[in-house]
Image 1 (cartoon, rainbow, N blue to C red):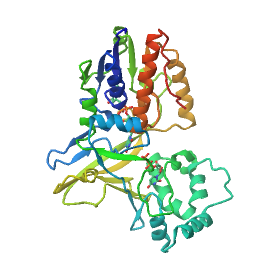
Image 2: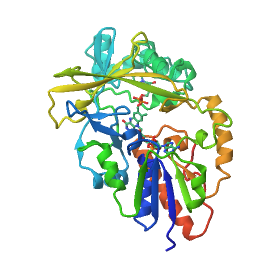
Image 3: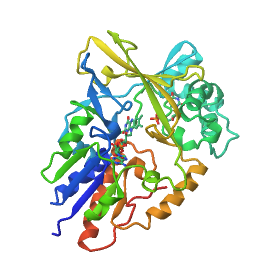
Image 4: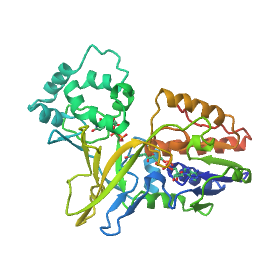
Length: 384
Ligand code: FAD
Ligand code: UDP
């Protein structure tokens, strides 16, 4: 087979998974990353003093229904059992999330059975909203005003910097409402945490004789001609020098603090009231329940609008941003020998399992097309 020289921009999960798949087929891969470390936003590292594994760019829990993805990551890490159970503080009380029978009974001070709780919530829901379009309508329709105002309204205003009436219903649809005591934050079949962390897992994926990685290297267009193909996981708008303006993102600030012993007794505590400035506190040692640490490392998490010098985290994807995205996509779709990948290259929020599944699909598509000498499409997956 025709061996190719490939440049991958970004040593995050998207870039490294594609690199691995293509390296295994004999292609030569150079990965560059502007950061001083690999693993992108999945990067984690042990806190020097306490040795607690800290998720540097925010809490990451692996969950998926995709067996191929699960099998793949298990080749590069021992996945330890971990179930994400989130708590929420509101009105001076602590509640169970996502909304489940415990939350409903706590909140309404009742002892409902599953069917009674279902009936109660149906009564609370606003049945006049037939086809909820916004986050707020979705919440009012399915959980009613009291639970909406307690758990979703303030948190969402802090997280997104706008009213839930301006956000799509799809954001809330990510969270289940359950009429039993199941407080698992996710519905997926597989869930776990890599024993030695995500950085180690991604390092192992990249450990292949056909892959070289160079850190602290910024992508430049001058590089392009030296390679048969480029996979680019940097920001799409940066690639085009922001010529139409910047795609809007939310960024996060993490305020780190350490304590002796335990701070909150769980990995994630959400703060749903609008007048508490942070959205949640993460106590990192609870992501590794199989380890013992005397000290604790915590992050208070604050969300705000992303400016030029910040790390883009959550794409906003409102009408204005989508119009801008279309302009960049028009340019991107005309490129040859170039594939835009990952959360920044395609301007979407992607969970890790989706990122990996898309990386598989992209690598497969590339392998199919090079042999047929076809032009590589820019996106191998539907972007909107
Ligand atoms: P990234 O990880 O962003 O990697 C892109 C890389 O490209 C970066 O290393 C960057 O430095 C590099 N780069 C960018 N531009 C350039 C350039 N011009 N030149 C050189 N290098 C460049 N997913 C889950 O499944 N579970 C979770 O619990 C979860 N929690 C999350 C929490 C937060 C706060 C966030 C923001 C995301 C979370 N995710 C979670 C999603 C997860 O982070 C992504 O799926 C994953 O990081 C996507 O990988 P990527 O390679 O596409 O992007
Ligand atoms: N959300 C909320 N209250 C909570 C948790 C989540 O209002 O206690 C909203 C918030 O708008 C968030 C969305 O539900 O963006 C989806 O929640 P998820 O936990 O999936 O958020 P993410 O992982 O994106 O931070």
